[in-house]
Image (cartoon, rainbow, N blue to C red; front, side):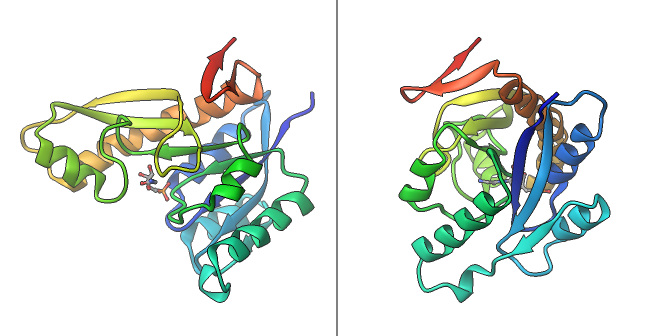
Length: 202
Ligand code: GAR
C-alpha cells in the first residue's frame, strides 16, 4: 500500500498533531506523517514529533524578511521531504496567496467552529458572545482567504449555558481529534477532492 505522504504544520501544543500521529500508527491507515514543521521554537508539537520519530523542522517566521520568504522556505522543506499533502494543525500564521495556490487541493486546516461562523481568533469567545446553542469544528480545504474554503467534515458540539471559553474549547477539541484523522483518511482514500473551488465527494 502506498501511503499519502503528509506534513503537519504546527505552532504550539499540537494535540491535533497527536491525533493524526495516533491515527497514522493504526494498521492500514492510508497516510503517513513524514514531516512536522513549526514556525515557533519550543512548540510542544515538536516534542510530540520527536517521540514519534518523525523528522521535525523549525522555521522561526521572525527570521524571514517577508511572509513570502517564509512561505518559500516552508515550500522548499515540504518539497525536499517529498510531501504530497499538508495538514495545518493549530498553525497560527496567515499563508501567502501564492503558497495557498501552490498547494491548492493538497492542504487542509482544522478550525474550532462551524465555519463560516466565527473565523479568526478567540473563536469560543465569539461563539459565547453570539449566544449560539451549537458550535463545533471544521476540517476544510485551505484557500487564500483566512478560515474559508470548502468543508470536508464538520462536527457539532452542544454549547451549555454554564460554558466558559475554556470548557467549550475542551469539548470542541475532543471533536477535533475525532474528525481530523477521519478527514485525512477520506483525502488519502480519494473519497474527497477539491474541484473548481468545491469539495467533491466520491
Ligand atoms: C485547535 O483548537 C485548532 O482548531 C485551532 O487551534 C487549536 C490548536 O490546538 N486552530 C485555529 O484556530 C486555526 N484558525 P492544538 O495545537 O492542540 O492542535
